[in-house]
Image (cartoon, rainbow, N blue to C red; front, side, top):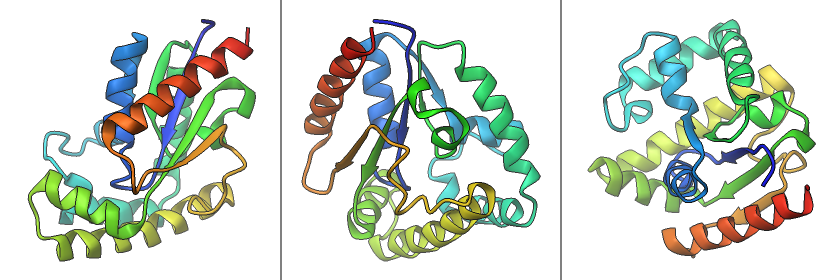
Length: 190
């Protein structure tokens, strides 16, 4: 396969981090966790599980809404980092930073209820708390990315090579679909 840049996109709880880890291992790609890098870049605590749904994560999102330069500076760093190739990244901004033909971009979709259930199980919090966090994050992130890229990340699918609805699929089913798609995508890119 040629030099690969794969981006897995999805709102909180869509399964993107899990798939990035599985696909990175399978394809022997460097895994880049954009949300972790964003926190490191801005000197935020990166070791707390479920950080984005907690108060500190919500406050940081508010900071980002008030100062778009936080994301602009980070996005420049991320774009340079991935251009070396042979990477897989869970990023929201990458599809708007690179040309569509420069990367294999995949959007994982799941309902707010499904994503809240996954976050609840992952972070060991009540489902109602997770659902409230998901709804708030969705609104803020849609607003943030509209302000940054004039794009609706919850509805703009034209930047993606594949859009996959994951509500009714298990982790392994999603993995198998994505693995087959990526193999075919890079086979046709030769």
